[in-house]
Length: 189
Image (cartoon, rainbow, N blue to C red; front, side, top):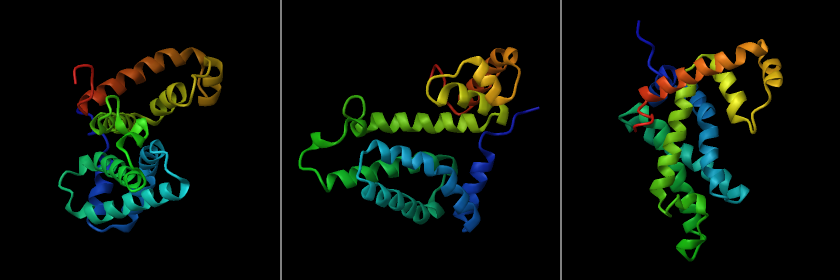
């Protein structure tokens, strides 16, 4: 038995939105708003400029989506578009390249470094979406919400016995590693 492809629902939603399905488009915007906001927040724009950038990204997406050939690249396209929108907002305000926030310049001052980091985040998000609800909840509670809570708090939060957390976490991390490898993200990529 083969596992379903990761993000089948997401890919279907992108395809339906590209074909003009308004409900699919709304669902797509809602599911990817956090991703776009994470890029925009890194740009440290004013609240008004950030709101404008968010609207601009999704306006560009609605125009470009029908022509997007590879629906699996929609998230990467959104990240790149959000990054360019932030750069555009900054370039209209700055007088010297050094005024861009460091987060926008990447590790070596190159935008490509940051784009790669954002694409990695997208793949991790897709890997998490491929997991069962139980695994996703456990991994997000254990790793994505600040310092990890102690096992008693985590067990209570998730409604599971404390003794099952370690083995379950190990299995969930294995499943995540497999999902990420299927997406092309792994120790050798």
